[in-house]
Image (cartoon, helix red, strand yellow):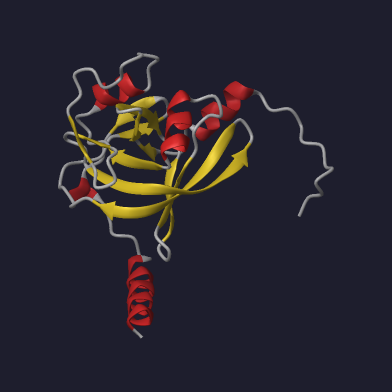
Length: 191
């Protein structure tokens, strides 16, 4: 383990971004309601965090106006985009003042916008917020989940949108372990 006083060499920001671009991510839109108005932003830095309790995380920039609105409301909805929603991603990734213009949505159980045609949504409350350099790391407690759809996800890889063919994938070996964990967790819950 390195010491906190260790000096980190300066990294070329362009190379850093290019190397991180080798990691394929899904694309989400994080939404909330602020003073009665829908607010949201495109977010690739989203991940599952914990099954018990059910937690997710996302990482907004510290200067994000959308994050400020989410922080005030204390709740948010993660909209997982489908492959056909590239234009939705581009709109929410822009500096457009009204990102919801022309975008259909319905309120989640907690009231945050669920974007029409999203592949899935995860409705959450803000659990904790942690410092992450020029970003925050936000932990959200999952309140409700959408039904599962069969469309393909929108992915981002090497600075481009891409997709995946679900029928050409191989199931991950860890699923057996996950099922064992879920069974143990469920059994513990009922004791």
